[in-house]
Structures are given as C-alpha cells and as structure tokens.
Image 1: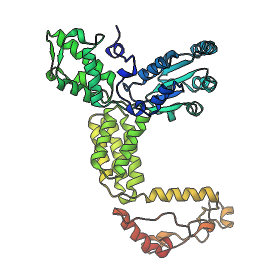
Image 2 (image 1 turned 30 degrees about the vertical axis):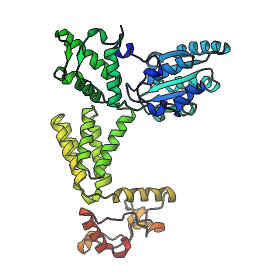
Image 3 (image 1 turned 90 degrees about the vertical axis):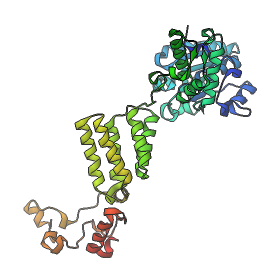
Length: 424
C-alpha cells in the first residue's frame, strides 16, 4: 500500500484542488482540455502543489500514452527506448506524453537529446521542477515548451484535501477517527502549501491516536516534531539566491527587522554561515561605505568571531553585524567611483604612468626622468601639496563624488579644503 498522498491522487479534474489560475474557464489548461490540444510544458512549483497529478490528468483526459519518469534514475538508453516506442505509436495516430519528474536533475546532454523529438512532435514533454527553469533548463528546450507556475496551495484548499482523505475509502475512512476542525486548520496552515506533507502528517497523527486506543484526534495530540515542516533551501537553487538577495537588500534598505528575519531564515535553512558573513561584508563595503567605515571592520570581525566560536554563539556576531549595517547611514560613493574608473579604463586602455610618479630604481631610469619633479607631500604643511596624479590625458577627470552622509561628510570637507574646486 502506497502513501496516503499516492492512494488519494485525483483521478479526474473534478477531484483536483487548487491552481485555479491555470484551470479556471478561459485559462491555459482549460483551453487545452477544451480543444483536446497537447503541447509541451514545464510545470514549475513548490513540493506538493500538484505538478505530477496535473500531468497525469492531462494525459488521461487527452487520451495520450503517458510515460512517467524520474530524472534521478533515467538513463539516455531509457530515453531512446521510450522515443522509439513513441514513434511507433505516432504511426498509429497515438500521441505520447513523456512526464519527467525533477527534470532539473537532467544534465545538458540529456536535455539536448530531447530537443528534436519535442520539435517534431514525436513526444510531448511535461517536465516537473521545483527549481527556476530559466536556471535549470537549457534555453533551446525552454523555448520549445510553455512554462506554467503552480502556486503553493492555500490553507482552505489543503483543508478540503484533508477532509476528503478522512472520508475516502482509500484514505482514512476505515480508521473511523473523528478529527477536530481546529486540527485540520492547524495542519493546513503548517503545511505551507504542500498537500503531500499535510496528508502524510494527518496519516501519522491518525495512526498515533489509534495506537493510543482513542477515536478522536485533538489539538493536544499534535506535537512539534510531527507538524514541523523543514524549511526549503537548496544551496545551488533559486531559493538560495532569493534569500541572500532579500537579506542584502533589507540591510541596504535600513530595515533592521527584515534584515534579522532573513538572517534567521538563512541560518535555520542550513545556509553556510560564512556565506552569510561574506554577504554582510559585501553590504558594508558596497552600501554603508564611507558613511561609516567601521561597518566593514564590524563585518569582517563578525566573520572572524564566527570562525572562532562556531554556531550557535557565533550566530550572534552575525546578527550584530547585520544590525550594524541596517542601522548605519548609507553611501555607495566608493562603489560608484570604482565602476566609473573601470569604465574609463575599458575606454582608454593602458594610459602611461606620468614620469614624476615613476620610481627611479636605476640610474638609467633616473636619467630618463623617472621621479623628476615629484613633490613629497610630507615635506609640506599638512602633509599635502597639489600635483597631478592621473595620466595627462585624463588629469582633470573626477571619479569620486562624496556624499553628505555620516563620516563621509567630514571626508568631503577635507577634500574641498585640500583641492578646492578641482575635486568637486
């Protein structure tokens, strides 16, 4: 006997719950069903949102030969055999849908192998993935398919699925266990859109109360280890980059609450804390910048503290540096200055170093004028003397434009005092 989720897999669209943005009248899957039209699809969505079931129901309703594969254990030879069979069936006017679960796990060669057969219509491909197809599917295959995003199921939709499980002969009906409505809502909310997780959790809880000799499932029967859903986090996938992006942008946006929330999300999901620390350092350099140069010191110190302490004590150092970034005044003047200089280097190439800035390490160099007329700043009052430091062709170019933020406002005043209008 399979899992509860497998036993209760819908056998018709009338039993399917959710994804109304795809199935409602006038929407794409409604149109395909009405027109009896097959196209190749990539179904992208979180676990338990109905990707496999949708593919199965489309194949069943459109009366296609349905071949279900898992990318994890499918070889190129398997694909060749399936394609050969599909070609034979095509000659008999029978279409074939090849459903590939976790298609993002196919390597580029396996994906490329499918291209001509999808192009000619020898097969109709339906791939299911939890990962962003634009990262995981090769562009030629992506251009030959329609990507449909499946949303996490709403709590009320999951509750409906759980109620069906309690009443269905293949479900939990034979257990004859009464389940409080509050329990169903609790399971629906804790599943975070994953119907499979909710069903499996319900099955475990029903088995638990039966083992205890009870005939009613109550809120008090739910324990945290049963209902807690692991946080989704693939260190190679889109979620990884989305969390890091939200974390960095929250610090840049001076929101301490959002910054600490995303930090907690990253750490709880199992992200490498040193990756998090590097993001904190990047924010300190790029976004806080010269408005508060101590932010970079704090950020680097947080990394060193974490390396010395490890988790959980070292996590506090990361939290401290995160909040320091979020609460500091911001300036991206250093970032902009570097980008401006890089652009000019690309444009102008290798401009010569002015002779007076060159170091005359040999007599020949000295005779050629290396170092001649160089003015040593420490020989002058305040340790400064105006002279040109840029190549002749760009001697009046300005890359750095200070902002009136925090410590940088002081730097701006000093710059004006030393250089006057030349550096404005």
